[in-house]
Length: 540
Image 1: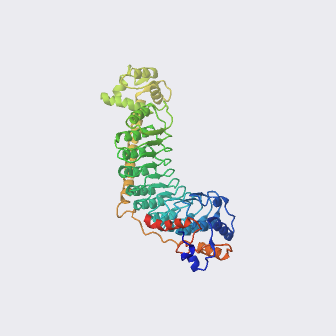
Image 2: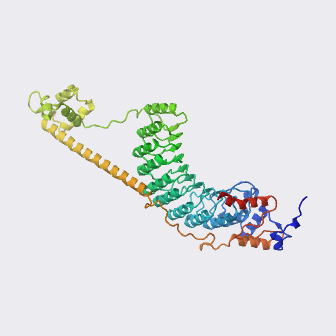
Image 3: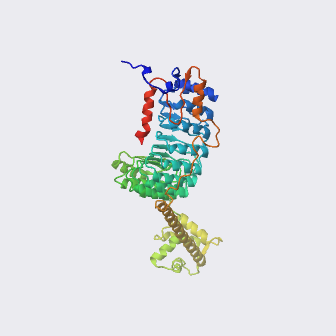
């Protein structure tokens, strides 16, 4: 038997509003637009009962966003809301945050390209500390800088619902990378993170890597178009050795050279979870590509499926190694650049001709004087150029080609006298020895600098992971209350509901106070409301 409505007590009856019918979603939005004084968005009206709402590039502004928020407070259908590129500013995101206090059905929110800046970042941070319904948040291109990053990172350390976070195309820089590292060390829920185009470099890159090593949940990380360089690659080597959850890593366009590729190769030899590694648009050569592929082949526990080095030119030797590797790992795909024969052989380093002669003399335990006297048949200490050429060509034990011989003749007979004397040969050897000593000294210096730099990077990496290190979170900065920012004079959303309730002659909307929406649009939405009230406790 159908129960009569008058058999139940309702809040509407308590308030003396039993004669009024609740506003529908569409009517509520139209009334909100009238109150806020904006033109209704027809697309929003037509799709208010869909699960996905795409309002990107609609030019809503802060006022248009407020009308949308009023209509969404009680909406139980929309689970994905896209507000990309709408200039909603911090004022608009304050209304969104207040709406999300009541609406726990929206799980995916895109606020990219809305000029939120630091004020908006603080409001979003306050929201993230309390919200348990959002699991995907996009904040790309909002002009967030170091302080914005600090606030967002602090909030994410205590958020246990966001699984996908897009912070790309901001300006976090070095200090921002440190804050992200702190967050990654503490967060155990985040699975997908996009930090591309953020100018993260130097200590920020190293600290971020240290946090990543401690992280136990992140699976997909996009670090492309930053400045990790070889130092960051060295830190990532330690991550790859020990991280057991990361499956997708994009470090393309990060100024990582062959030295950095060598460090990554060491990490790949031990890693057992990474499936995709993107390294394109880094200054890598064929030798670096070979190191990476060899490391994957050597690691029998590797799960690698894709290696992207599409800008690297390779040769037939690399392709042979790739064929052999793919026979053992048929699921592996390597994306490389063109195949060319021009690099089939490594460019031979030009060797000083006098150095080649000196090596021969050392092997035979001969003096330079003995070498010269064997060519000076008449003992005049002068050897005609033609005779000198023929003598060098006949020295089969000295590997000199025609070009090298001509170069040596030009050095020894700069005045064009047509003869080579012993003094010029001695001077040429002295010059060669000076250059060689300088080269050895420079190589030692460079090697020492690389070693010191690597040690410094690893010290920074290790110190960031110790209890005394910077990876421990400092107390989060106190953030302004949502809706209470002194920058905004807008009236809280609840007052708009009350205004519509008192001004509407045909319909009434209940006042949505701190206890939530008491009445939803008529129909099946009441069942959704009951489910919504259960959602937070279930997620916790």
